[in-house]
Length: 288
Ligand code: ZN
Image (tube, rainbow, N blue to C red; front, side, top):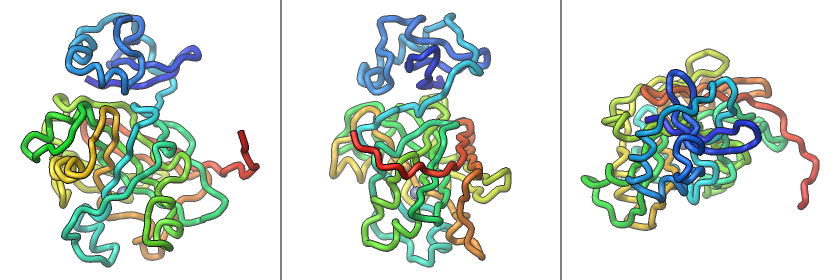
């Protein structure tokens, strides 16, 4: 099942993506929560009810797709998690998982503008498989990690390289507004099957820049959940960016970065494609 958060006729709600349009769950199953985190918190019963929904179709062309989770409680991201990206970064394969956060306010959906900030010209792409957590999780061993995953989607860990690397903490350079595109929708874990067999590609203005497969993850999805839940409770709707393969702009010779007007497309097997275009930031102070 493919679960989308979408806006139609002025209201934002969740639905099921089908070949014939989006089943509007608010109309088809009015007892279900209409917001993704509340829906995930409602657990297996809500998921089962959604699977039985039919009718109430809205043409896909008539909706705006939003990020599947509009405001995740946490967005955790791992660094240096594909061998070719470690090599292109000139670094050693990490002994421990390298975790940083992206601000939840960086999340946007498929088709949303990505802002080119005035303060940097070093804006880079990172195609990533993203996990969306479905169940509250703490101290989850690797062999049970699959139980807490609601599903997966494409992500783009947009990175402001100078801001990322000029201090020991990545957080600010990874957290600019709109620099966490996520989508186009959540594909449930049962439909994906093994998450470690998926082709992952990134294109900039139609030119391929990254091409790998999630079998090449150094720490796989289940390792990541085991490690994170040793430290913190993961909650429904939390998002994990699982790392990017080789082919980022900062490692190209010469280096290449995104410019206003560039379109970045992330494609992952079974999950669809996520496409966003860079637009110049408005630097007018905003207060209140
Ligand atoms: Zn990344």
